[in-house]
Length: 444
Image (cartoon, rainbow, N blue to C red; front, side, top):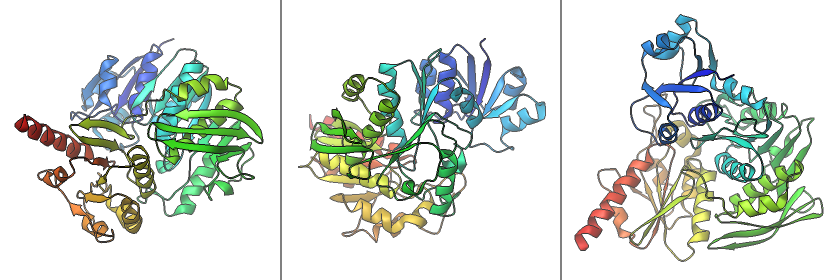
């Protein structure tokens, strides 16, 4: 029987997809959020899901709904406070997701890096070979009634994935991130091991990660990677070209065949192998997996590429040194003969304090580096470090740019400009594109 759901913070990168899933399953869904446009609201509007402005009266007008509370909101948020005072039924986002998990064979993807790209790839393949609902952290969600599978991106921040008990888990890596919450790498590891302990059928983990090698769980554990004698799902015969990568995979000596992905970077070969591994363990037809890996289009804000005149612009969510390194590696594979220009917006002061040297090392892979001022957060409006502190550590230095003056970027007429960050780096990108358009218009 259809239910009624009201999402407090419906534009969230997890909340929006879950709202879409419940809507697709025939439930009545609406929600509220800030008035400012975000890229996550477009799919909601396309689906006809109503988005209201935050207002305590919304709660009183929908008291018979189940309220889903976004992870970002404390008890004093206007609608959360009203819901608590009114005594309406209210559940957290993880609790709402946990309800979905129980209805299908669930594959959860977790990791400090790569979980959105891997979830997107897994969802793309699974939806083409079986009835699959999916929730991806780029704001994409799709629900199918009577789904056979449910693909989920599981977020480790503040241990949000703790309530999840999926059938399978893909673990891409464990790294120290979110220093505003986690104390150190051991603290992060404990969260992942706790989550892994709740997996029912099997875990597929990246073999190169030393922390993942230490997991102590009762569920079957399979490693994927390119080291013979260590990895259960072994990658061999890698051929990286400017149109993508070809590689072969075997499982404990059994040849599973050759695969091609139309995306770039060694990390995406690992991600694809994790997808192949789960499909194999669940007994799915690998011919279908092979066919649909070939057509994987990527996910939002993960190496999204466009041409503006002679300039190639790549947009990526990378905001951790490991992610920056992977993104620049992918850019170099696709464009081996072009200048690679990094335009990076550091995200949160605590992350910069924790990783200043690592940021500099990762960014030094680019031919030229530009930095914007640090993008803070609701919890960190200011700090004791700046983008200049990163620039000082980069060999050859880096140029600090602002949204008001992006003219230095115009020097790279035939370059590949990689805009990276988890804040509002897109506004710099859009301003630059507008500037390029004006110049081209003046020339014509």
